[in-house]
Image 1 (cartoon, helix red, strand yellow):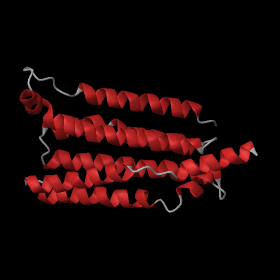
Image 2: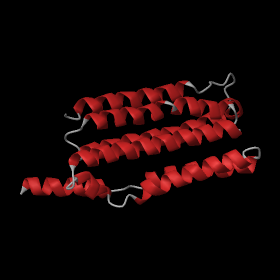
Image 3: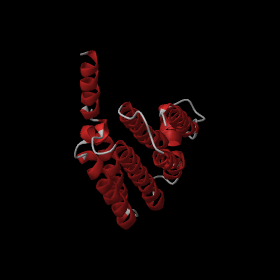
Image 4: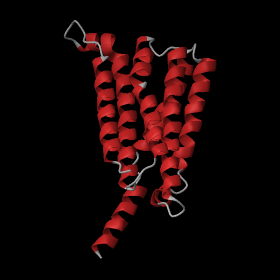
Length: 205
C-alpha cells in the first residue's frame, strides 16, 4: 500500500491537535502583562512545550516517510497507535496547566510522552520489518541513540514526579527531564536527510 493517505491523515490529525491546544489557553480579562502571566503564564509554558513535541513528531514522521514507499497493514495500525498517544497531549497538557504542575498531572503528562515515544518506535519497527533486511530506513536510523535515551529520560521524569512531586523542586526536576528530551530532538538530525540526498544523487546519475 502507498503512504499518501496515511501521511495526509496524520498531517490533519496533528494540525487539529495543535489547534485544540491553543484553544485551551485562557484570555486574560485585563490588558496587562501581569494579567497575562496570572491567567495564562503556566498555560503558555505548557503549550510551548507540547507544541514543540508535536512539531518534533511531525518532523520525524515526515522524514521517516520520505524513506517509505510502501507500508503494511501493521504499519497502518502502528500509525494509529501513535496518533492515539499524540491526540492525548492536549488533555494532559491542559490538566497539567490547570493543576499548576502538581504531582499527578505531571506524572500523567510524562506517561503520555512515554507512550508516544514507544508508539513511534513500534511504527518505525513495523516499517523496517516490512522493508526487509536491506531496509533503507534501518540504515538511515542506525543505532538510534536518541530514540533509546528518550524513554529512559521520560521514565526518570515520571519517577521523580511520582516520588517528589509534592515539592516544587521535584516538579521542576521532573519537567526538566521532559524539556531535555525536547532539546535533544530539536538538535538537527541529518541521518535521514543524508540518505535522501544520496538516493537523489544516484537517481541523477
